[in-house]
Length: 533
Ligand code: GLN
Image 1 (tube, protein in one colour):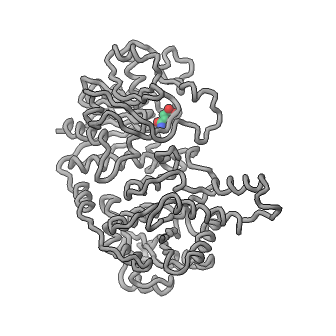
Image 2: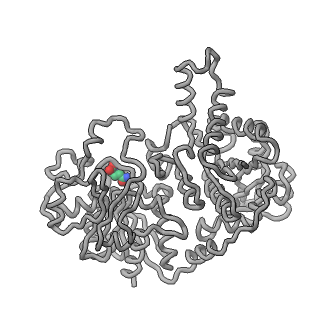
Image 3: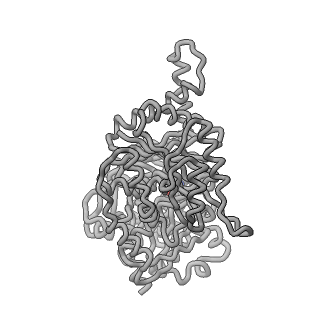
């Protein structure tokens, strides 16, 4: 069993998760079984209660864990099957330690960060290797070296590597090499200081991954090697990608990071076959046609708020050799400017998930515009609920139909809470979360996409299609093409006389892979492509 720890220095947002995931891709393609996990130093138990503006998208795993969006990278870049064990936060660690203290498990001792908190972190490392057997466990440490809250994690992995003995734990530090344009130079000082901080704790990284806008010349590499105590070949250049994040594994491979890691860890493996991956990247960079898709949301200013949705579109577009230009549209603006002005000329409209009433009428107007103008429409979770409300109001004569989330007193609650969600007051981890079975109705667009009678999809929502309105909406022409057999819940709705008008109560974006796009995203993009032709 070997371990790789990835830390970050100088600034946040360096793409540490992407670097770790790309290394995962390369090691898997070398035939190794890889498991990935993230340690997040913040005190929230999970990011489920955080606003997307704070933290970007909340990624949901099969078992219903609400996670950091880096776990999305791990699942897209590797075949690692992740569970709630794969994302540990300080909040979870402290929750455990405090529960033990209250039970009296520490037998009268003073409970301290070292050893009690660090032991709890190390026990997570042992637990994961027990439950998810693999050749290599890659652990990314969130935050930046020097953060107070990250210290217990760094101390724990230092102790852990000592216990594992030499040659079993590899430390990679992802750092920024800023370019000072006035001097026309790349600067190494912030990295030197970041490494000094790590060495204070007792960690001396073996590989330095340098995020940079400009190539590292031989002098810079030499200087970094000298001051940071890594060999020259282990100074890895990771330039900003020109086109797509999927170039990162190719870039890291050309810098030999996978070979260096395997050599250090004593793993004798053949080089990775990157032909399929390269082909996928080529398809993204050189599409044969172009189309414009509008993403109508309310967290549009945060570039990571709809991460998985954007990646899923990329996967599907590559498979159709289509270049999708994604236009992010703030739904509140539709309310003031009108749908026509903002949505005209689009070849597809996608309404993703969301919470709260801000911008809802704008989304309803977008769904209406797509329905009336035969523009391909794909609604995810809230986007499906919106489509139902719009259809009820304008096609089934249910004036003022709404979701009780936005208008509790609506005369026609076409979307409402199911019994088990009523009376829940705690917000954390109490939604309908994780994988559920969905039965697909034959002869529908959903069936055409999946080609299967039953699928499983991941959920994260409280409100549901209200079964009291099933017959009314069906007789007005709404097709209920997917249902959950246990709870008798509507999971997919669609329109028959439309090129593509599909809404799903689940989040298909959490199951799309680079070379295996999700069937519904695939067919949506196909419809977009046809519409643009
Ligand atoms: N707010 C809606 C609900 O809770 C939709 C949630 C979502 O889009 N993820 O049901």
